[in-house]
Length: 475
Image (cartoon, rainbow, N blue to C red):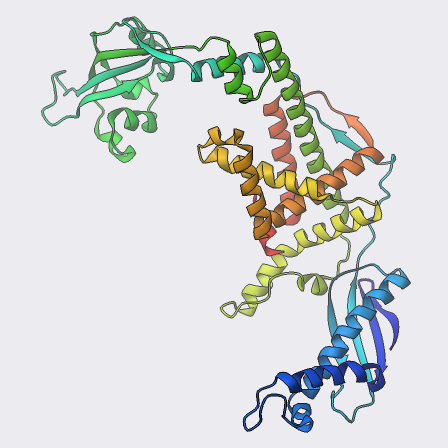
């Protein structure tokens, strides 16, 4: 087999391939022989079908398959030897072969897409912003306070404080201030002064005691928040406007949450059952350490986004072999019109170009993406899913979490694909951070960091023509 190449244009290389029937003779004979043993043909016992019939039925397809497999392998070797960097699938440009027993020489022309060069050398001449997160002792105070309140016990009291839960009976009033005959009547609902937005009404509630009766304008109390009013009255939001009159409430019970003491039970609640923390000082030190790890991870995440934006900006205007890249995407479905297919492909191609450049840069810079990093990202995703399902108590069950992680990896579905793409981005960003000049920004609060991250992601999505959700499943 002989291969030569020529440039079709800046983004495509043509591979001219010649081979003879002698090059494929042995493999074709072996495959036809195997087919003769296994083929079931009417009128013949298995293995007894004449070779001429097998040749007539399968010969052309076998030669085509053998040549396709052989040329694909040889093309890979050739491109590597020639130092030609390609991307995407291969396209058959010319094939006038008959693949019959009589043909002795074969000629093929196949095109491959050329990977464009990144327009900049990634070294100290490149300056990128680097964001960090402020250390925040107040956050640690709040974490401890929240944990104490969550672990606290409720007791019944007589007076009212801001965070108390008041269980009340409810009676709707009419225009004359009397009990409305067909108005809402509830034996029990509840109200928390903390969430009453009107200061005057909240102050009135805070002066009350168990057994007191109050008249409250709910629309004023909650600043016309239909969600809060509907929840209190136990009705649908769209029904709230039908109940504009004040309500009479009588306080039946007042429950106050007494924060948990700072003790071993709280330490285990906050840090897990295996923690060795024994006092408040050690608790604060451990929370500060965890806060530092989280802040470092957040800084790393946002730098990954900075690098992604840098790459996306730099590849604008580069010529990519889009036809060859499109071969990496899902094929046209039977239900899809050509117009719909073209629209889908054109929408996704900018993202595919970015992913292609990402892989190319990782290769150029010698970046390896360890399986451990992919697993870590999958695990983080699993833990977020558990948390969002309201099952946070299961997060300390390492055996369960690892079982779900293993199952996710074995499925090899969109979630694993997305984790691999994230791992490529994170691994490249870590390498880029070593090479470029960092423009250190002032430390940000977590809220500010989220805002910066959101702005960066919007810019990336705009450049790629994407919505807020990346189309990972399409690639």
